Amino acid sequence: MKSFIISIILLISINLFAQDFSKVDKLVLNGISNKYFPGAALIISFKQDVVYEKYYGGYTYDEKDVGITENSIYDIASCTKVIATTSAVMKLYEAGLLDLDAKVSYYLPEFGVNGKQNISLRNLLLHNSGLKAWIPFYKTCSNKTDVVNTIYNLGLEYETGTKYVYSDLNFITLGLIVEKVTGVSLSEYCQKEIFYPLKIQSTFFRPDRDVMDFIVPTEYDSNWRMRQLKGEVHDEAASLLDGISGNAGLFSTARDLHTLMRVLQNKGKYFNPYTRGLKEESLFKEETVELFLKKYETNDYTNTRALGWDTKQEPVGKYRSQCGELISANCFGHTGYTGTSVWCDRDRGIIIVFLTNRVYPSRDNNGIKEVRPELHNLIIKTLTNN
Image (cartoon, rainbow, N blue to C red; front, side, top):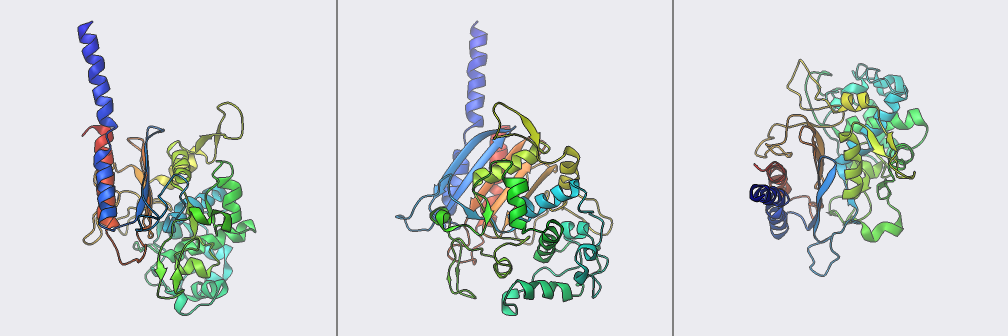
């Protein structure tokens, strides 16, 4: 009996230790103190159960400003590429409306000029298309038509398929393909086919005025728009594309993003929130999830990308891998320029959603790149008792 009681006490102690995220709290709060970001939203789940949910700081550095809560809505920047655009491509692929190996010019004939004839949808998803990394469209374009025509008229920066160059242009183009195939905007398609079935209600492009109080501000744009950005997309290209773009423009909460990440971790399955009882349904087929989340093997260069998603990365320059060093190789995730990230360690069943507005009040602040890898490492250590 005595040994049984001791065993129970030990089990309780181990469990309590596993739930001690005080070091994580300290790291995030230090980030706020150092003005790397004004506030943050964090959700951690372990084997399908949320084990930690915490909201830190405020919308701005003003101590009197509103604090971050579960209702706070962030501009998730490039996380749009996976949460919206890649998800839309997955649905259309399953429906037989998109062929990943078809040429982009099959869907967008105007695109297939100046050496771009052999670029496929798969190349866009893998960021090895040959398109340049970025264009300051705001310097030469006035509207969506100008941006689209600029991309159509581009030549190649390098031979298609020969190296990895992360490019917003790839996902702007994918967004255009989704709209061409479906006949509706990327926003409408995602709302109907992805967000509505999951009862995701605070994720959208171009937020309405009635949710403006919940939206976390990003940058004071002193370069182009000359105003504080709040409720309008931070990314300049997406702004010219009327706020709806395959590369950026989505606004969301930590809980909404966690919901979709959990569906992917669960191989496409979810419990229908609109029916009584626990009725499991599929947002995606299991084989589709496996196809898109698996690191893609390439012959010409070392690749860390899955289709749309990233996997465990190598350090870039002076910065560590943003998913940390302890996450398993069998992982998927993405980061957003505004200070957002979503990552899942598939082997351990860990999901980490971490949202900040590190670009407030200026993008000239890269402290998040020091916090983010350490955050992931600390969480994995805590959950695995290492």
